Amino acid sequence: MLSVAVLTTAALASVIQTQINLAELSALGAPVGAGTRIATTLEDLARFGPVTVGITAAAFLLSLTAGHVVSRRMSARLRSVVLALAGAAGLWTAFWLLGKVSPMPALVEATDSVGGLAAVCLSGLPGGALYARMTAAGAGRQPARGRLRAVLPLAALVLVPALLFYAMAPRPGAAVAVTFARADPTSYRVQTIAVGLQRPWSVAFLPDGRTLVTEREGRLLALGRDGKVAAIALDGLPPVPRAGGGPLMNIVVDPDFTQNRLLYLTMGYGGPGANGTRLLRARLAGDRLEDVRVLLSSTLKSSPGNNGGALAVLADGTLVMSVGDGHRREQAQVPGRCNAAGAPWHNPEPRRGCVR
Image 1: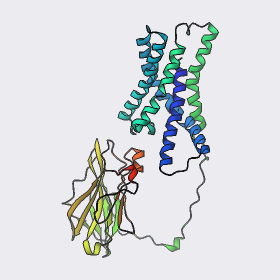
Image 2 (image 1 turned 135 degrees about the horizontal axis):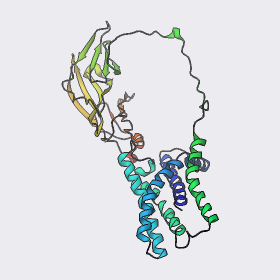
Image 3 (image 1 turned 60 degrees about the vertical axis):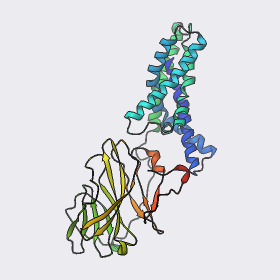
Image 4 (image 1 turned 180 degrees about the vertical axis):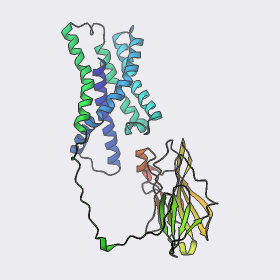
């Protein structure tokens, strides 16, 4: 009985989460036709359905069992209502717990919003109601042949996800062949300009011929044309976190560096349980940085890594910075940027809001 309710709810939840994700893609301007919608929904049922089955089974095992005990002396109609609500509540609890322990905010991207979570969890209503009908008084008294038929849904609960996982698993040699263009080895020259660096991360070229290099452990070096390495003093920079927040990362030179001597750097901040990415502006004065200013501190995240921090200066002087996904993949689609002069941050897509 429980297995039928689980399979029904898992299928509905998978279909709902696919429609929510497709709606988000449509809002971003991606063309989502009827054929694409149907094909994606079916593929998600095959790929994501087994995961939904596991989540639903764990949720229903507790919530419907509790609802069954609570409602056993109630009328059939009231019992059906209680079990339907228990199914929805069980799914909500399962996704809430996953959001606390999973590296991702949840195993279902659609549940990251209140509306999406409510829509997915409402799929537990028909599952709970179906369980109530199948376990109503007298429904469970079956002859031996009927009990054998009752085992079939349980077998399907195990076999269907397993078969789908097997069917959708990548096959050796099935990957799309990629052809890489080969560069003419006579068209370029490889030259070693420095050795002994400690996990170098990013480079920036100065007008005087020197090369600035950031190292993951928190050093900024200047490499001369003669191969000499000089450390740039970082006294004005915030402390580089050794764990959780990430290293000293990217560096770019201001387009008007010859006049203003400005550099832009990114680095992690915070600790293992609350960390993010910072954008800094500093002035290079000889062998040290001065006039250090924090331009942006990204939203804190609870897991280390995936900090982003890539920088680029566009032709119009706009400074573009990536903030990574921070283990929240959907947040990587929320862009923010500012101009290199330090004007207030603005967003090329105001509807979606800036990352702060």
